[in-house]
Image 1 (cartoon, rainbow over the protein chains, first blue to last red):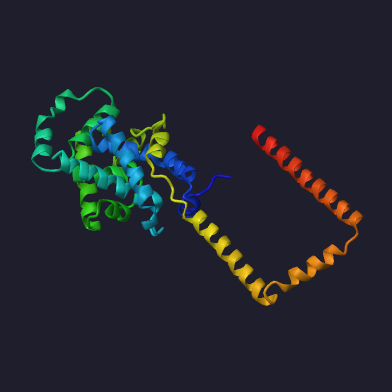
Image 2: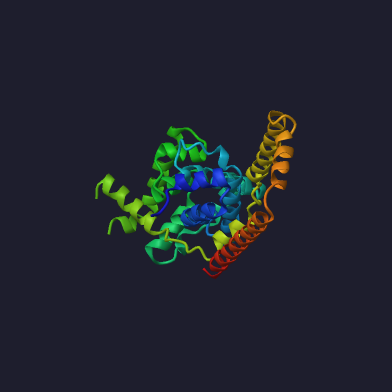
Length: 178
Length: 113
């Protein structure tokens, strides 16, 4: 029988069982790495480095996990903090560089295929809207959970998701109408 | 296409655009970076065992009038016939040997499995 996340966390807390933590990493690595790949606009090496940092940081701070939220929500928050800290260091957080990057993007250079168009449309969104859309629409978090992960008010999350969705729909209008 | 259908379509496509990422050594890499667990429990266990043993010894010494019963029992032992002493030594030796053989075989089967 497969153990629940809560049971694995209990083993980590009581016995410092690193095999149990390994199982938690195996379960969540895909979603965490996927989220980071989107946030870093497809920089796989950077995304995987940040994902490793996030999992190591989660292990060191696992005693602060009180079980009020899902483990995945708590993990996403650590993941997002890792990304934000790294982005600050690289001066890539929302601001001049983000705007410059968006200005460099030419919508005419989009590769054929919906997936490519979707990824491109996502990468054109400002970071705050991209993060909210990825968490809520792609990873299935509720607005409330996304607000905890992003550490912003619930209303702001709803606005960001709404605006992000609208922009995506507009960019992908040709596909939506089919 | 109404608003809700468009929204569902977009969410579905977003989910489909995020395929499962194979582990490919990622978990092993994370586990290598984890700090070694601190064996607080083991230290506490040995501390408790030594403490309880010391306490039990002290209590025995006090309650037995300074260990006088040991002297008494030793005097009694000197009165035991020699044959009994030889039989006791033989039985003890065989018991220890049986214990050793059992431990060795169980350890071997453990390693083999």
